[in-house]
Length: 142
Image (cartoon, rainbow, N blue to C red):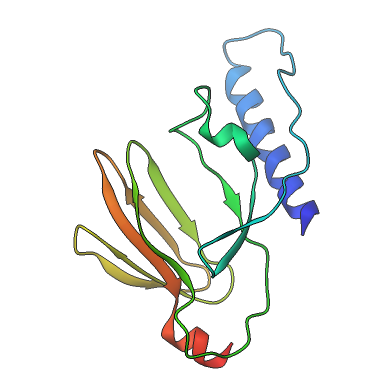
């Protein structure tokens, strides 16, 4: 689980270095990020913030907020699990579902279920309010 997060960090760093290598002749490591500590987003998503607290700093925010939610067992329930309405602005949000399924709804009237292998791209632009919950089917089965 942590290995996957670290692998994602390394691949993103490699991509950034590769992209800059076209115009730069030498590279320097600016910072090495410590192992991220997980936290809950709502009551349905236990995530590792890949860039930790840097996601909300002037250097990265609002361009990059990257959370990784490793596989987790959720028992069947009738409770709605996830994160309720919350705002975003000034960046794009991308959700990739590797397992399970997520019900999405936003203030622009878009609703959909994101299933295994699906990618959902949402433009926050000047502002949008959205919510994401485990799908009804997923919470019934666990």
